[in-house]
Each structure stands twice: as structure tokens, then as C-alpha cells.
Image (cartoon, rainbow, N blue to C red; front, side):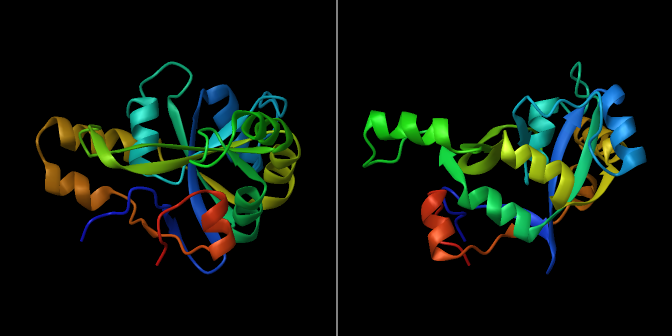
Length: 199
């Protein structure tokens, strides 16, 4: 079965959805201890959350890039996640959107949606897309204060999976990966983020 060009795929249950971020230990360790993002995390900066584990691995180089050596799995409430989608604007223009409307939408929305090529276990570019969600302003405040159910460290998982891939143990690497399923969206949310048909 062909994966739709744009589709949110994630690890989730009835109440929460898991997203990933990678940080320096100076930010990651206090966040793990507090189970919330605290200083030196800066709310003033846009913070990007990623439901795709492999896209996070591509972005952080399997937890090897400077400033991204600790990978965190953050469980968010699905209510919060869907609030973010509902209050988002696309980084890329919709087919029927004029440039002025796009600029106004980006300026007004506290959430930015970007669709980037999904990645394989070898971090090669794939044909279908993975969603990245940028939070700013009110969305960051809600993220930090309301939405987070738990924060866990998955750095070892990242490095162990990378070691399996490097050694050619692809089946072992695949078994380590978090299981991600298509995330169900209402028709309105699917339209807002310009996804393909959801399950």
C-alpha cells in the first residue's frame, strides 16, 4: 500500500501523541528532571516538534550534531496537539493561496506547519512527506504549561539504532523503531494542514 504524499504518522494512544526534540544536555537534563521545559530553554524562540522518529534522527544525525546530542520523546495531550494544528499556517503556500494572504497567515498564526521528505532507516530522502510543527508565542506557552504529559530520554535508542544500521543489522534496527501509525484528523484539521486523506 502506497503511503500518502502528506500524512501525519505518529506513536499515539487515546490521550497522548509522542513528538521528538533534540537539545544540548544543558536544556535536556533540566527538562527531564522537571518533566517540563525550564531554563535555559527559551520560550521566545520558535520550537519545532516532530512526530516522526526517523525525521528527528535525520535532523540530529542520530544524536551526534552539536546542540542536539540528547533526544527527548515528549508525550503531549492529543487535545493540545490538535489545538496546535487548528491554529497553524503552512510554511509553503496552498495551491490557491495568494502571496499576501500567505504572509498575513504566517504573521498571525502561533504555529507553523512544514512538510519535509520523510527519511528511511539510512536517512535517505523518501517520496512521501513528514510533518514538522513550529510553535511560537501562545503555542509555546501552552506547550510548556499545559500539554506535556511526560518527557523521556531516547538518546540511547537513537545511538543503538544507528549502530545497528552502520553494522548492517537492518532487521534489528527496524525492531527498535517506535511504531508509528497514521494519525486520525477531522476533515477541518486535515484541510488546515493540507494532509492527504487520513484513516
